[in-house]
Length: 286
Image 1 (cartoon, one colour):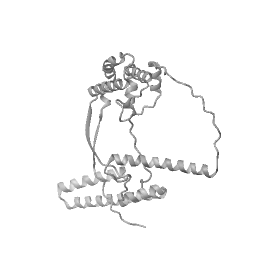
Image 2: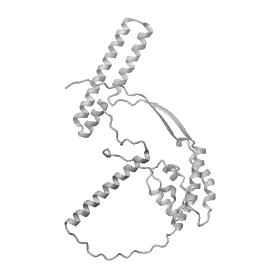
Image 3: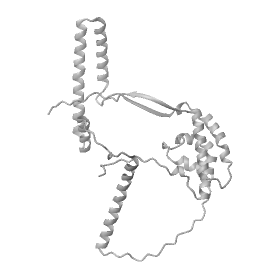
Image 4: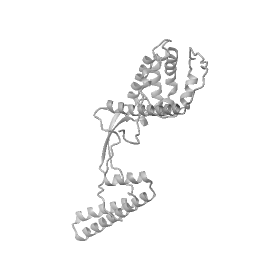
């Protein structure tokens, strides 16, 4: 079965990205300046507010980063290559452009014929490459991949999220969906237990140990915990994790002070209660 589809070339994408160029960062100089900026925080006595310490620590780290690796915005244009684009297509396109420039420079009919022949050969090769690519892809694809490929060819657009005029309303509906799902599961379990006339045995209340204080940490223990952790970074972090580990000796006195302040006061810093969640929906909420 053969058919033709209108599959235009992908447009050039213009993206604006903001970030810091850590490749030009002198890490030793950065660590020295950071240690000077954090030295007053390490000398704070007991009873300090962990929220205030964390805020001042974050400000000092960001100010030092702005000095050594300022945040810049870049404009990038790039065109995504088609999956069937290979070295042969690249070479044939170069040859076509050379023949076109030669024909436009000389105006001779023989050069025009050479250009048209090369252009026809390139188009024929691209059509064969496209057909071979999609034939191999659909032959070995599962049902999900097959529908995704057909949607891309037929330009079918699916809305992954329900329509909403308010982000707050959308997030509330998202949270309500899972809350209602859990309530339904609980109702089914309770109904099953009631139908089977199950009785719960009398349970002796467990003896819960009382923990009225937490032992403070030290620089050695905190360093081991940080170095054993993965080098993953969140957009909410004041500095990348690998940069933190590379200049950990400058951070440690202040981090120890923040952790011990939180343990002694029983307060978790409010700033660290914020998280970035990216939901991956399998189906639209109805």
